[in-house]
Amino acid sequence: MTASPPADSDGPAVRAWTGPWGMAVGAALFGLGGLVAGRLAGAAAVGWGGVLLAGGGIGAMVLLHGRRLRRVRRRAAARIDAARDDRDAAREALDTATDRIETLEEMRTAKSQFLEEISHAFRRLLTLTLGPIDTLLEGRHGALGDEVRTQLRLAERNGTRLLWLVNQLLDLAEL
Image (tube, rainbow, N blue to C red; front, side, top):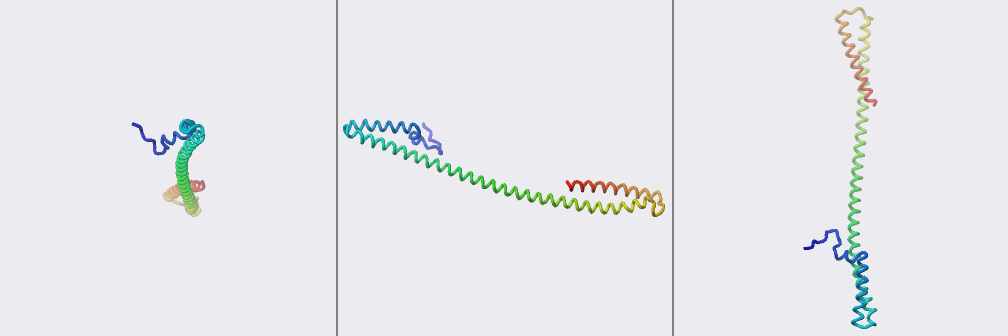
């Protein structure tokens, strides 16, 4: 049982008539035509019979080769169309990725600006709060009790820590 040729092949009939074998078959047909014509019609008919038979063989080869060439062209056109579709899809993906990158860049810029602005606002308020606490601890407004001094030192320590954290946040926003 013989298997049928694959869908994308030209089949055994076409392949037999193309390439070097096609030329050999054409030459054999030419010779056979000459022999048959010479036996049937005599020496005068040898030339015409051979020419007709060879012409038929060559015509068959050209016909089959043209058929194969059309199939190859159709496959090439399909591959070109597929490549164009792939190229268009890649361009669309690139455009989408470019838009996404621009959006992310805008978001990053907005985040950095927000962090910088909020850090400056906190820093200003903390500096304005820590200034009077320092003044009170130095005793410029009179003597303070131990309880008040302890509470002011606690407020100063916590405010200084908070200011350090805000400065870290500001450094991060500048990066």
